[in-house]
Length: 251
Image 1 (cartoon, one colour):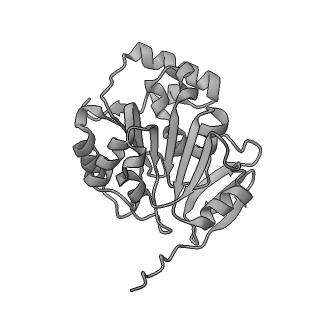
Image 2 (cartoon, one colour):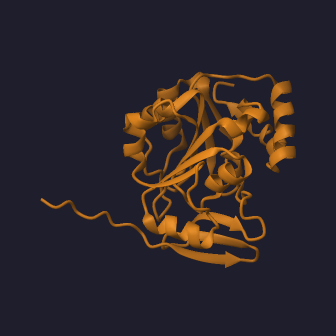
């Protein structure tokens, strides 16, 4: 019996002023790029997906491995690869998204540090190949309607945890008209333990970024402030602002 082909949404691009946007056949924005700063991150919630930097010293970042589940407009992939100089692997199900990122969003060709893989995030998460090989795992998986996360159960998050190194960190974008933040947060804490989970307040657009550590960390306010200042200085990310809206879930 022949498997039914997976129906994937069409990809289209729009521009407004100095920003280019990626869409999956609808008005919902799936990613963006500033035309004059293609490797910087334009959207607030995507910037917050780099909050894992608060749990590491700046000088160790370029020796780490980042992975994205869902390429979007490649903002995180480009930032990790081009700005943070990390080894970077992106997993994307839709070949049109990969083509659009390479054509319209200045995603570089694969090299010794960058690998963009056409594949299913659930299969990659469950496979033993990447277990304990990923230091930073970004999960931003939405369909064309952006109604709810495509993968959002405790089993999936447990698989994600197995990918992480001992110092590893998961970051998840939670957004959607039919999604439940509390349910999603419950699934993440079930997989990681409540003491390992931190969360931002929602953005104006309704995106809530949740961070979960393979092993719990609770740096002092002084350490977080120093790291945030260094993050802003080195990489132009608004990390000092994050500290006003980012807390452990048990706080």
